[in-house]
Image (cartoon, rainbow, N blue to C red; front, side):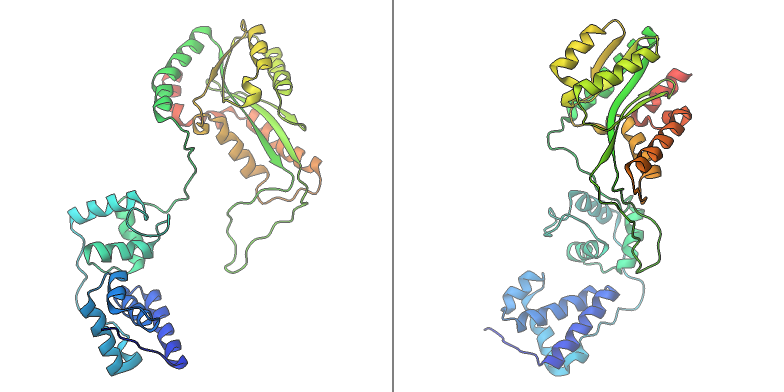
Length: 359
């Protein structure tokens, strides 16, 4: 038997207000009760409502019967006395597995966990009702933290990356030590005149604003950092990154040094072109080149240098002219060039090896 109900506008507004309060208080049972009534008023059957909200059909009928008797006054929930029951150790382990699998695997139509969503997961799976404010404490206890996700290429070859760390990298390190060479990680970065945004503290309700010239122009920089000493080589560039401009930069570095150079670079086209292959052949007595695994910027420590330069030089800053931008970037690069300890602190995944070499 289908049950149909309707609400006057005043009653509907009162119900919506109670729903808002229930969400704010984190009372899931009351949230479900109100959603059940709204769904019935929208024309859903008792069985459909029960299936959507993971309730029994009798529970849905009881919600409706109580509402017909008491009206909006029925939409309250009194917590039982005493402390709420806790998840057992086994249930906590299962919860960790569910969270790590992601919301979609748990049946939610989204990709991001929130405290309210995990509260709902705990209630659905284990029948425990926690306040959403406590959920954050629980997640910290389980080893989770609220983080921003990062992209990982779907072309990434994890086996190749592990081979690099465990086999190729130690071999390159030994070779550079034997040749008493500079072991250089290379890359390029572009710094935009229109500036860059970042998080900062500000008064609530007053979003920080930063003026921008709106000019789509960037200052390009070639860079190399030495694994052993923290030495930085860099060159500003106003044109495009090309094989010709890359050769010019490397030629300057060769002219500034006397020892052998071991260069580790990514697979950018202007790094691996036929022109660059000829250049490397012509300078093989001074220059040995290795390629990083594909789609592995996290294996190149100079990436962290670019982030620090942008954070300190361009984030939340206004550059009315291109010269203002280049002066700020050059000043910050000069600082890092004169502070090799800062560079050595960026070596990330290679720090253990660096410690061994220093010892």
